[in-house]
Image (cartoon, rainbow, N blue to C red; front, top):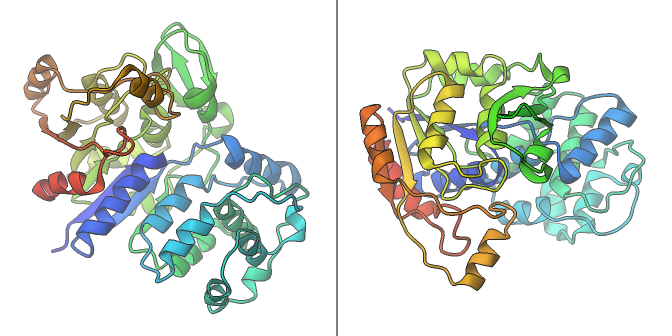
Length: 376
C-alpha cells in the first residue's frame, strides 16, 4: 500500500517540505497538506481588510495555500505558474478595472500561457473583483485566488479549481476557512495580537507562554477535510517553520488537537535549523519539541535535526542574522543533554546534514528526503 502522509505547517518551511516530497518521492506516497491560516500581514492582510471593508466577508489568507499549490503542481506550465503567481504587480491600476487574465498580462505572461488558461474556462478568467483599490504591491497569486473566491462565492470551489488548473498532485487543505486570528501571551502577562505582530513587529519583553485564538476567532473550527486526512494518515510530518505562527497556530484551531490525539499515525517533527529573535529567542531544540508536544497533547515519535555546523565570518554572520527569517537568531543543534532527555522520553532523534548551502537556514530538499526515506 502507498503510505499516506499528512504535512502540517505554513510559510516557507511547509512549501519547501512539499517541494522535497513532490520532487523525490513522486507517486510513492499519498500526500495531504494542512496549511496554517492565521496570516494577516503585509499585502495578504491588506487584501483581507479590503474584502472585509468593501465586500463584507472574510477572505481566508491565500499566501501559504498559493505556495503549497504550485509546489505540488504537475502542470506542463508549472514554472510559468510559479513565476507569475509569485510576481508582485508594479503598475498602478484599480483592482475593479482588471480581469484575472489582465493580472497575468501585467506581469508579462506569454500569449501561450493565456491560451492555456482559457482552455479551462474562458468565462471565469474575465471576472472582475469589485474592490476600489490599487493592484500595485499585490502578488498575482493572491489576487487570482481572491477574485476566484468572489466569482464562485465558495472558497472550496475556488480551491478545487486551483487544484484542477495547476494539476496539483496532493490535497492542499486550509486548516480552517473561518477567521483564525491569534494572540500570544508572554510569560510576564503581556499580550501580542495577530500573526504579523507576533512574527515580525512586536518588541518582546518576555518569552511566549501561551498561544490562543483572538476573541473574534474563538469559533474557528477545522476544515471538514482535516479530520478525514488525519484519520487515514500513516505519518504526520510537522514541517519546519516559525514555531508559534506557522506550526502551533494549527493546533489551536478547534478539533485539530483532538483528532491528532486519536490517531495512530507516527508523528515526525522536522526541526528548524535556527531560532528567531522575538518569537523563539533563546529557545533550544528541545524547547521546540516540548512546546509542540504541549500544544499537541501527545508525544512526537521522531525528531529530525540538522547537524551541520557552519563557521561564519563576522560579516557573513551579520548578513545571515539580518534575514527576516532569522532576525538576530542563531543556529540550533542538539546538545548531549537534550539527546539524553529525548532518549528518556522515548523520542527517536535523527541528526543529519540538512542545510541548504545557499540560504543556510532552509533545509536542502534532497538532503531532507534522504532522511525521510529511512522513515516512510
